[in-house]
Image 1 (cartoon, one colour):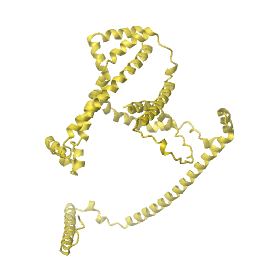
Image 2 (cartoon, one colour; image 1 turned 60 degrees about the vertical axis):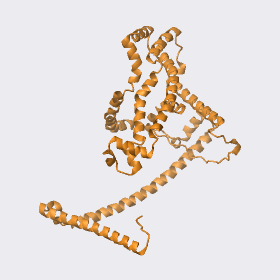
Image 3 (tube, rainbow, N blue to C red; image 1 turned 120 degrees about the vertical axis):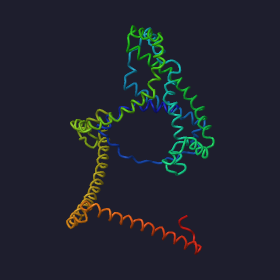
Image 4 (spheres, rainbow, N blue to C red; image 1 turned 135 degrees about the horizontal axis):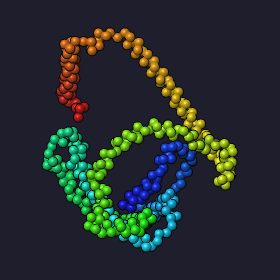
Length: 388
């Protein structure tokens, strides 16, 4: 589970990356020469061993520390002034009511409990898709079967299916609950800091007074779980297509606005004067930057040559296509409109189509008869059946 939380945090820290990436996609540095290094066998550590697990944890902690430092730098949380203890104590009472013990588990179970069991039902072997995949029978035919029959079919493939599903729920759910309970404590602390800075002591006291009432207590205990209520989730999902359409409709307008500014310059675009200024700022030898710029330019030149070659091939193909199109136009000039079926009478069209159908069926019958005759001949001669 730790990798999941790490991934969530890392995903949050790079949420802003696409904004600059789409504005001007930077070029990657030219590939450097890779030198293979033989790793002595005695240096290998089994990832599943205690030492290997310790190394994995240490690596993950290092990455987490880097991600946390990035988040603090982006939002400037490390530079915020301290909170008065009295103000923080009031906020802690507020967030204690809003995030009571077990609230995260309740929220997750509200969504993922139903979702998890639903997915297990779909992927666990009883769904039309899975039964079709396992048996090779069309899903439409399987969908016509009743649930009892589908269950019996699934049991043939996995008699222990239900026990396996329950085993997963029994062993995974407690671990999820434990992780969520551990998460509630830092979540309450973080919310307390945010509430203490956002709201005055009087506002926090009014919230606490409301949460002490039956209505306030009911709201505080349910507000988080309600965020994962199926009706709310479904409403959000239904809102996605109109929102996506709005972005699609605005794309040309946005593209036009983004073109107003010149593109970001790359290393290959910098002049000697630019490199001299850059070297002074970075306190490095200007020749190092010039060598790097020349390397970029050589890569760009090679890419341009490849593009020109591809463009030449495309031009030749386009010329061939144009010639073929011209031949087709010439042939069309000799076309007899009498063969255009839209000019035929209904009776003539039906007669022709009936004869075409008869020809098609006769052809199929001839192929089948030929295959049957060949099979009989192989059987008579003692030859293997190639159809098997």
